Length: 70
Length: 512
Image (cartoon, rainbow over all chains, first blue to last red; front, side, top):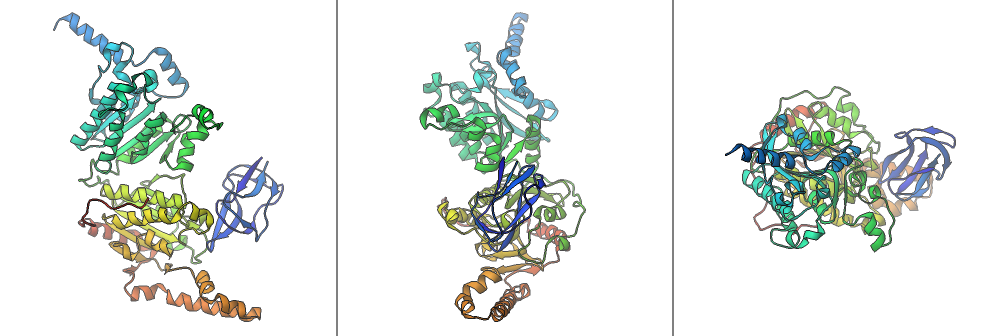
């Protein structure tokens, strides 16, 4: 089990994966907005999404988990 | 000389060249490590040592060949370099009195010859049993670091980390211009995991504490992560091709090569200021094919730093990466940029800034980490750099981001803009919110509110229109992205005779 974290403080614009999706390291899993910029978040691991921890509009700090991979 | 004397000498030398006991050579093999002399054969042209001094250091001890360090001079790509290389088969590469003396002497040699000095480190640290002879005295281990600081900016100093560099020894890489680390084998720490557990109660693995990957991604102490020792040596050889032998010379030139083919820059850069794009693709279109040599690739990826060749000539590139953290500058990226700029400026490597930066990060996390003083380091380095420096505003340059990327006030030889450029204290959305916040809140009808905001955005955009800034002579020119390479080649060629003294004084009080 591995959490993919936000690399920056900001707001979640959208989550691009759902529970059960297969993702590979380097796939974009979410888009944040911070400093008025769109910030793509890429998965750092391969795995299947077992949990989505945030919703569009949520505030996240650097290091907060966005999704969990199995 | 009698045959007997000749035989004695030959046997003695053979013993020295063999290094430590066979069991330690076996250990090297298990760790996928090369023997120290094989590393040097791989490093030097034709595998040839031009000279080696102190071979007989501690000879009389019997079991300490060369006292655990090889100090030699050879050629790399036809140019002289000095080397000190620990031998981990001799008492784990630890330092005795003669080890230290040999290292100091090769530093003195490199200083006199004005040639690069490479530190091939693989050492357990000081020999505690010898501490009085090698630790506190005038020509003790401290003098190695003192010399490194003295040589900094005079000659290139590079560390290749093949094994541990523990405690005080960890300062050798710290004082080098660049540190190349071999994955899984290299490590760097003040206190080992064992010591940490005893002294502060922390339980941690060596890799977590001070492994190559950690230092290249997180601490920033490592510049280049190599998979193997061979790759580390090749990286050092490549690195040197961008550098002159010393600060008084210009970097060597190579044959000009056209850039990698691909999408034109006008297609790469999105017009929409907030959308991410990959700055590497743009760099690829500018520089000679396969000439980009990145430094700290895995650390603070929102700022790209690396050497490249433009029409055969070495340059240093500092570029924001909009794809990572929006290209926003953070504490680590500021440090990364500051060191890289100083490195290029010290060795006459012209600087190219490619700006697409929303500014420095804000928020409590970064304020507490001292973003202001870290940002000040970067801006200080930009100010002091007197090598030819070109600032290209690729897209946005907001706030102090403009200053960090060698904006007009920082004496670039030119500040040129692509048609997509936008220079301002802040972006339109932030600016309209800041100025009209109360007024926007007061408009009750949502449609009216949106209309008002859009009008103000438009007005703001007109005030920061890039043609207006060119008309006011704030920027020196507007250039088509697809012509940028040619423009840069011509401009760097013109600026190559630049001579300038920044300021007369002893030294600045550096913001750290």
